Image (cartoon, rainbow, N blue to C red; front, side):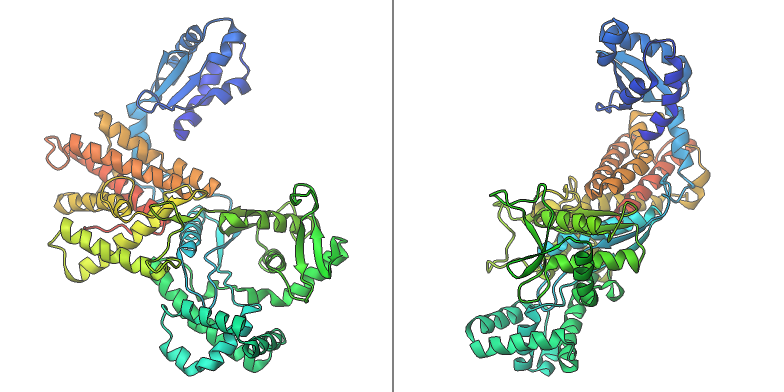
Length: 580
């Protein structure tokens, strides 16, 4: 418990001043207990045994006796097996919990604001969105929400693939099909087929391939008719992206789109600045940067960052360097975050290093690659559709809503009509998002319908049901939630204490999640809070309590629990229904 450590640590250091222990050594030992049922704070004394020339057990008993008087009213002190254990005093814990009743931030403190750009989602024009885009989109969206909650100015950038050599063949295929047919009939399920048809023609039809190459030249020269056709592809694709984003209930909109095309005018600038810095070299007709150091191939030769290819075209690295110039100089950002899959780890390391050495960003700026693993099926393979292709994101989302609807019919057959449809979407989409976010993003995870839609375990439906259960309690209560803001909270049972600790620790858990860019840490805490509430609900009568003061206290705990769940889920981009 961060709050308890902050208030107890200075008193502990003062109490042991007579011992030959430096404040630094002692401060480093004071930390959260790994055995929550026994203590909230633990001080391991084994390393102090040599200094004080006593056994760890003797040291812990001595220190426990010294600090106990100064911690009265804050923590209960004991020693065991060479550890000093501190457990929050119920009255202190009740006071901390009461302080959150009128705090809309639930103890979360605002940071000194920074301007942060989060680059995420990044689908490709005229191509289907697949499950790989799911991870980038929902992880990025959660990070944006959390950073905004902490008071930062967050700029969302959706770096869509809307420029480059593939657009020659795509535009020519569009001409062959007829743009009117494309714009009126194109459904979101047809993009993969459209792209594949263009690729097949490019690979097997020499005349078409020549047309496509000529069209690329016209596109790069910004020929007006070619740009108009290019925009047809972009507009139809953007409408499709928006349908997916609406289903996912994420923050991205048209204003957030900053595709590769937005930086095309800066690409020559990247080359010019790298040449002026002396970093650019020629290699087999290409313009490259050699970083040296750890960036070498298997033979030990330096690995190049290709800036301009031998045919005069630019590479992905050039585009990302142009992004950095734009974001630093035009937007004046402080931080750059890229939510992109783990396979791009080396790419971003090298791009960031080039940008730093070339002066595109300096010590005031931080650039972070927020990597993530893959979505796998039950056999540990890349998740595919029944046809063996990459699973389409929109199909996956639709199926989740259908499955959620079926689960609701089984759990609450009285729920029908618009309410059922609305809640089915909340649960279905929430289940998919939470299954992703509750997993350490750096690891692969198994896509399991039964697990993610279960009303038990660490799942969104379980958390959503906890919130709905509390809403049900208040619908039956003679006391309104608003009237509880100045209530007196009493913690007379172990179950109440455990729940109160979860409530108080919300701010700490959120900070850990934000500072590590790991949303799963927040998920873990929300689940722990819901589990603590379930135990509290079974053990502690609320509306049937014989004492009105106890009823008010327990209703206040219910209110705070619901707020922790709904606030936490909202920061993950998941809705909290009031009935299920």
